[in-house]
Image (cartoon, rainbow, N blue to C red):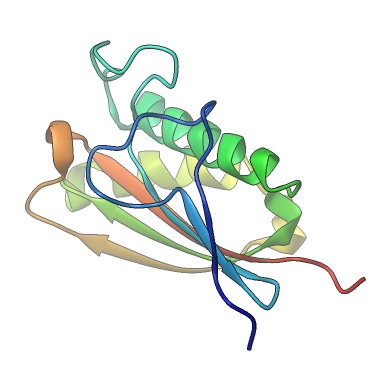
Length: 133
């Protein structure tokens, strides 16, 4: 097993806790959960509503994937955390699935939680894999 590579990207959102944007080992990449923060202005208010927050989270994850030279087609699984599960589950799903082709949906777990950093409504993390050379 190769030594892990700890990735941080200046184009990605500012860290809200002590973590790397992604950690890679042997072609496997774990992307830290992203919040719906503005990557250009950490002090900006979060978008209003779960749809807008889900879009911002997915776009932030795409920034990290881009930094790795990867795209959503390399994502194998996602974990979604939402604070208002009953209220927001369907709306979050509608936005989330718009990012993937219907025939290439990653494996996924969705978890209702009591709270997220910055009072966000949604956070998503990913596992991706580099294609074999």
